[in-house]
Length: 340
Image 1 (spheres, rainbow, N blue to C red):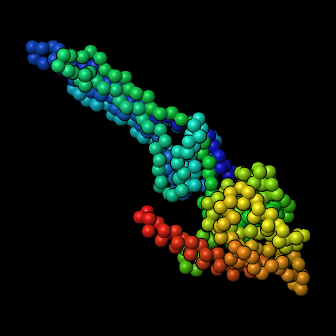
Image 2 (image 1 turned 60 degrees about the vertical axis):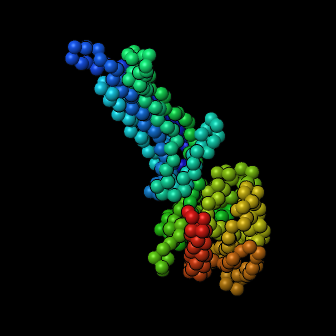
Image 3 (image 1 turned 30 degrees about the vertical axis):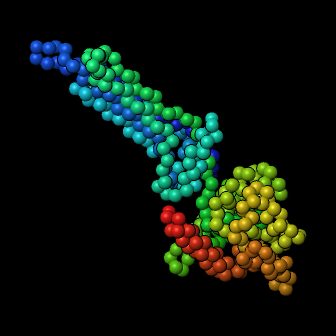
């Protein structure tokens, strides 16, 4: 099961109480104050972990609390601090405060970490309150409460290539052909109800990640057919691959409709590098295969493929691998120029 949203409660630890204590000295059973401060409470951190793929665990465990700090001791001993806890989430997770709507973090890189709830400060012991006019203070502070929040976790897939198309356009079949992923494949609409990821190996030893996005319908950018739930998973992809069933009427119009849906949801998506694939060539007799177009503005590749027979797949993989590496190289150069 793929889970891409969850709500959880997080609570940092309370600080320990300060101590009221006095030194015991020869001939003076009540020496100067020596009460130590309490330890700070533990904090709650979130950390991106590329080994996680969904937010499933948060459906069953919704409460995360860091331990409190220990109370202060005599002889000016500070109580031990509560240990921080680290909540691991998949890379690509956005964390928001539900009450304020504030975005706390967008964790996109493995190991990236953010403090989400700070531990409470430990209270001061009575030795902290000594003054020229107050040599034997009888009071100390309680520990301060830690931060508490209800947060929403939202996962947006991180992939190099996103497969976009109407239901039953052949996205899952293509993914199963080019990767080891095994999404459910059947000849009826809405077979894929959750995103699937697969890794394509290359001759150079590298590879790229492909995401099979559930089929869209017209009006998806307005939320129809779970449109918003599906569309957000292509926001981070470097390249968009549009798949259109060539056996359907007006296949080129299907592409234009899909592009308009993306533009309506997020205009920047329509500016991503993209290619157009006409699928299911194996269904048509060879003499009836004719692509509606050979070139389109803003499209770096127009091709026909058959994921069943393998026609056009090798050329597609070479082109995508080359284009992904070009984009990555540009990103690395930009990061270097910016000092990142």
